[in-house]
Figure (cartoon, rainbow, N blue to C red):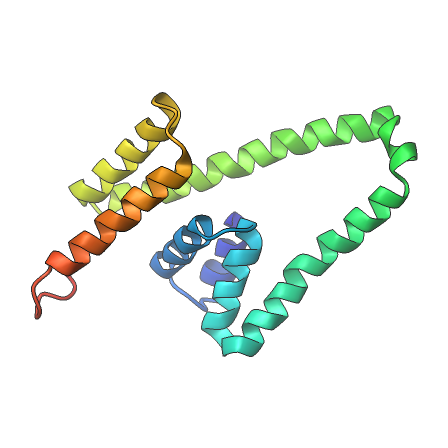
Length: 160
């Protein structure tokens, strides 16, 4: 997600930061890998169905090839201390990327100074981390809340 934001928002200016956050939120609530879901949405946004199909191939094909090669040589990789150390290093890197996404997205929500959005963010964190509620229930509750809020808005009050 940070790489996609850097490219699509910061470098190419194809979409703005708020739209990127919306696409990531939709991607996270959709089944399947986040990277593929987000790339499909960005591809569709940029070039329609053809863009979505191209991004599916571009996102899924490289890992598929790498995993195929690794699985072919699995026995050799499995016992290698170098590979073991590299995998542990990758775990640390993934943790750093996840923390970066949390910091960026939470910062964007706080910058909006929307008490409801901040409250939902804090409640979602508490529900999943403290109370160990399944993330799917939290996503469904947030979706229901979003629908309820959208329906409660009176016509002519768009953008509030």
